[in-house]
Length: 208
Image (cartoon, rainbow, N blue to C red; front, side):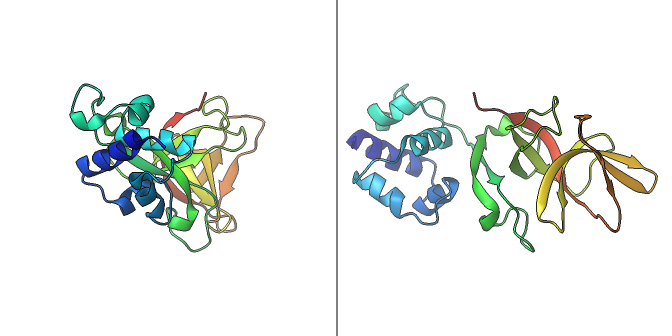
């Protein structure tokens, strides 16, 4: 393992005044034991984890592995605060939407690319919002209990077990959840089929 990486990791973590438990949480780990082993130089995390670490500290991955960043040279690429946003998996019954057991990982955004608020991320499954939001996108949701008619919202259905993205259409006392893909049917919200708005979709990203 590269001793440069372990030295850089400890340096960058301390520079951001972040303890090992905080970093472990950002990486979706239940304990900080791996962080401690990395900083001791015992072993190297997998490539995907290395990429996540580079994103958290906003440094070039190659520099993280090979350059001594403690020398405070131009090797450090404008380290700024990164906003970690939890990516939700299946929602557990009775739990808050962003409860730990619902989180399958994190995505990271620069604060100046987001509006003010608290955020979660949903991975789209299916093509009901195509072409507005392609299948397989990561959609950033600003948590809020209501949206304007015509806006795209993340909505809980099926007894708060299923999170879906739909365009909210308000008609008098009724709410209809409308897919942008005409191949899918709209959902009428009523007492027999209730829904709860989680928040408003503000942006989406796709992996190449």
